[in-house]
Amino acid sequence: MKKIFTIFFIFCLVSALNAQTLPNASVENWQEFSFPSYMQPEFWSTPNPFTSQATVLVVTRSEEAYSGTYSARLETKDLAGGLFQAPGLLTLATFNVNLSTFEYAFGNGLPLQEKVLSFTGMYKYEGAQEDSASVAIYCYKKDGDAYDTIGMGHAFLHDAANWTLFEVNMNYLNDHQPDTFNVIIMSSGIASLNPGSVMFVDSLSVNTNVGVIDLDMPKLVVNCYPNPANNQVTFEVALPSADRVVFFYDLLGKELGKIAFPFTNLQVSLGEYPSGTILYRIVDPKKGMATGSVVKN
Image (cartoon, rainbow, N blue to C red; front, side, top):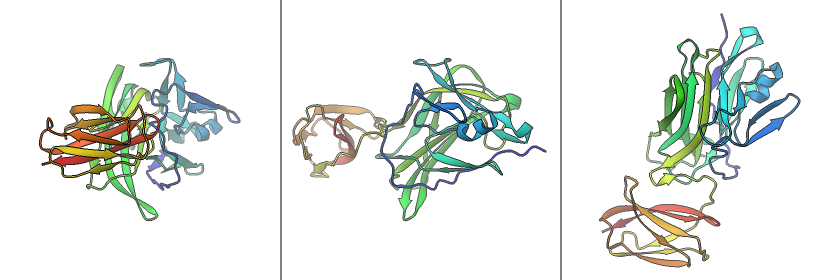
């Protein structure tokens, strides 16, 4: 009887992380390693550092791309003469493998500044023996020395000969604000890893109710008052910036308007906006981003 990789989703998340955008989302940039020899997409983790020791690579660079030059090719393969099976896997987390038991332990993730609604990308897939690919997303909040799961989402992806859009929605367990995000993409399902299952992935993105999230941008400190407001709200920041813009949205993510915010103080008339909660997003390409809401009476 074959022994299958046991996937332990042990997210021992740490706070000493550098904020970055959804890194290398187009999987265009690849890093080469030697001794043993393998490649993997920059900023992403794969099983290659471990499987390459058995001269097996489960994630490779492919010129069969949806956009740009490259995509990532994930394949589930046998190890140790078929005693173990390793999935092709991409994750923003770090993880380790116990080489005696081939059990995975995941950790870390990317800092969040706002809630994730969904994770999307393009894929092609051919599953062996009715296998299916899987995509899992998670968000957390630090609670002392542990991380509390705030939301999760999961989808199985089936055979697709042509590039196909997938979307995984985040299901929130409570109304807490998460501070860490992770995604795990596998060429097989979690329970059954069938060698020969092949998945191509490209053009990945993380989405919120105010558009595509940029995890690279630092937190911009903004003072917004009064809140609630009647017909006018004021935004204040520490420094001027010629490129800064404030966007306004309704609760469904529809853009209501946008205004340049070059100085340290901006007064905005809310007269044209509907009463109730109005979301705002302030974007400064050089200094950071801030999100929040204001209630119009």
